[in-house]
Amino acid sequence: MLFMRDKLGRKINYMRISVTDRCNLFCLYCKKEKLSFKPPEEILRYEEILRVARIAISLGISKIRITGGEPLVRKGITGFVSELSSLPGLEDISLTTNGILLAEFAKPLYKAGLKRINVSLDTLKREKFKDITGEDEFGNVWKGIENVLAAGMNPVKINVVLLKGINEDEAADFVALTKDERITVRFIELMPLGIQRENNRKLFVSLDEVLKNLKNIYEMKVYDSGNNLGPATYYRVKNCGLVGFIGSISGCFCGDCNRLRLTASGYLKPCLWSDKAVNIKEILRAGAPDAEIAEILRKAIREKPAEREINKKVSFPMSEAGG
Ligand code: SAM
Image 1 (cartoon, protein in one colour):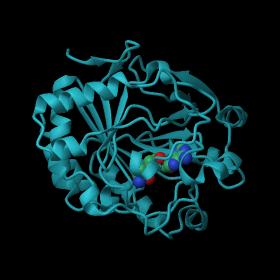
Image 2 (cartoon, rainbow, N blue to C red; image 1 turned 90 degrees about the vertical axis):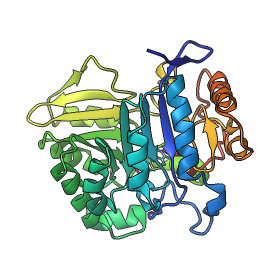
Image 3 (cartoon, rainbow, N blue to C red; image 1 turned 180 degrees about the vertical axis):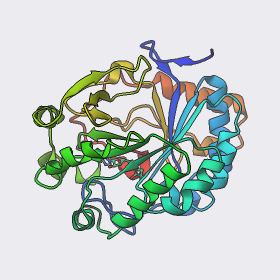
């Protein structure tokens, strides 16, 4: 099978596409000013994203995740998913959402060809949800998860960012959710990124600690499916299901990184932790042929750093780069 390799020989077959920098939540570790979203003309049009995706697939990208901002706030998202999923050669298409609009979108997205959804949910308590996100939407997110399962998309992965003194006490409750085998929970370490980077350092919780505490409650065994399941280390929990740990800070997955990101405003970013980015929007809009676009994709891959630089001040917010 065709695929691209970067200068270190890493196989690059996965692209995360942020379709909007807009979000309907203002999470305390991610939020930006409400009025600082980019004007529509600075955001890639769907046909531009589809063109980049088609060319990327021809070079060996086989997995695409749609993210944002909040992807479900962008008008026409179902039609976009339908067109994306019909591109020949794309083997896996998934979406990451905060779930607020999922109750309404679950079935249409499934029909449009989406088979996997990750929902970001940091608390199981309604009041705390409001404190973390700024909105009283817990009930809608939960309804969304139920509708995703009812639509036949399972397992649903729930991604939880643990925050010191805020929701770290809920880890065991999240594990209990996996008693429903259709739900997989993944804990993610908070990264010092975006305008909240300094505050995020104070809220950081090490997943080593979390795992140690959970092992006092649950019997957990490392689970290796034999497939490459990405950066998470999974555990099978006795009488429950699968729980993943993504130690974004305490671990380093750079050696296996297979990702390229396309930001909402059309930058190809070879690493979340770097400001290195190649502007593909200008080239697209200047009427470049496919071969030139392909060269820009190759250039972005050539520029992929060997390792992330955790202490660097990265100016791309997560909402733009696509978490
Ligand atoms: N709106 C969608 C959602 O909520 O899933 C997609 C975009 S959001 C930026 C993607 C994920 O990034 C969410 O799970 C969010 O919790 C996570 N995230 C945002 N800022 C983060 C940070 N500084 N460290 C770790 N995860 C972060």
